[in-house]
Amino acid sequence: MTSLLETVVPDLRAGVQALSFHALRRLGLAEAVRDRVVQRRPSPAADALLCTSLALMASDGGTLYPAFTLVDQTVEAAKRHASLRSSAAFLNACLRRFLREREELLGPLLSNTVARWNHPNWWVERLQRDHPAHWRSILGIAQSPAPMVLRVNTRRISVQAFCDRLASAGIPAQVIDGAAVQLDRSRPVRDIPGHAAGWVSVQSAAAQRAAPLLLSGMDVTTPRVLDACAAPGGKTAHLLEHCPEARVTAIDVDAERSRRVVDNLSRLGLDADVLVANAAHVESWWNGEPFDAILLDAPCSASGIVRRHPDVRWLRRESDIAQLAAQQDRLLAALWPLVVPGGRLLFCTCSVFRQEGAERIAAFLARNTDAVPLGAPGHLLPLADGETCPVGDNGNRDEDGFFYALLQKRPR
Image (cartoon, rainbow, N blue to C red; front, side):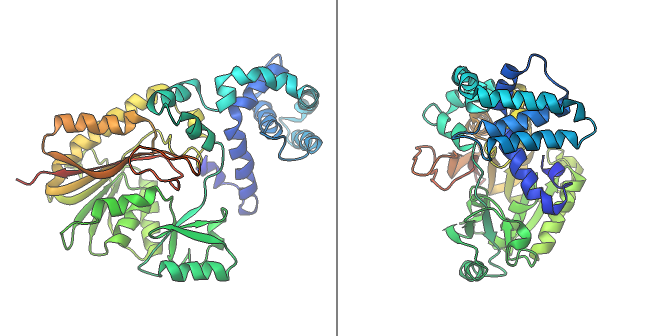
């Protein structure tokens, strides 16, 4: 989804993203309504336009725009597209029927899990098992946009000085933790003072926990650090901002994404050894020198960041979770021997599923008696303000779902 949005002209991108993200957050409901107002599913293009309009019209509390404006603009959009012109009258009839029969059409859908929660059935059932006290809140908060959080590059500017620059630019913000600053609303990065100059990066508060967790309290003057699965480089940069003396190697299997790591480091005035390689295939890239610290931000379902990527819930399949868990196990097994005795490995995923978090670490510890768990948050859950959670040290400002486990290798 992100790559497609990058192809939209800049002046239209924000609007296209807002509309498409809203439609994806209400897609379960929109498709269920669609199935009640049509006898035969239309062409993919017409179906996409119909479901987008229904998602906007069936929003909680009514429509985001005047209902008849939505109908008019949907029909107008169809008329302007060669492949949709023949569907204009059909779309008009469907949407006007929804307006006439709104309550009758929506009422029965309260018992439809996908329509009510706008997530696949298997996703809802997994959350019910993994987080029986919080699954409703996790699903509910996924329906709203995530806040925009910045990480101040304190090698370039202090947090207070940056906040003063924001205030001068008329951008309300608050410091939420360390170098994390949350804006009142999302804005294009070009409007953020000093972004191009490397003062700040966009990074969620939960993701900003990684570097301090891994490196704080280490007694190594110039630690050798590996960032496995590093792209797009946010955590790589934070490692260097947090510990300027660190010698960082950043690995990613994708060449294009690795270039993004280099670009991000360059913008911030930082330097790391960036390699294009599969971190699990150690023999292809490792020079034999052990690492004092390894950050393994492992590939996962991204189930904790669906506020930011609402298409993920519809793209994932239940079978993906076991496959990703197996990949996480392979990466842990491959990288653990590279940690120096007394060194650390931080395992993290942006997932709320226990199979991609606590269960992976429990299995790893059962196989590796030289691994000692240190203090770490565990599962962070994306909860609504004011809702508390006994898991780890989850705070109300952890707007993304993450898992963190910090392991130390026993000294010889």
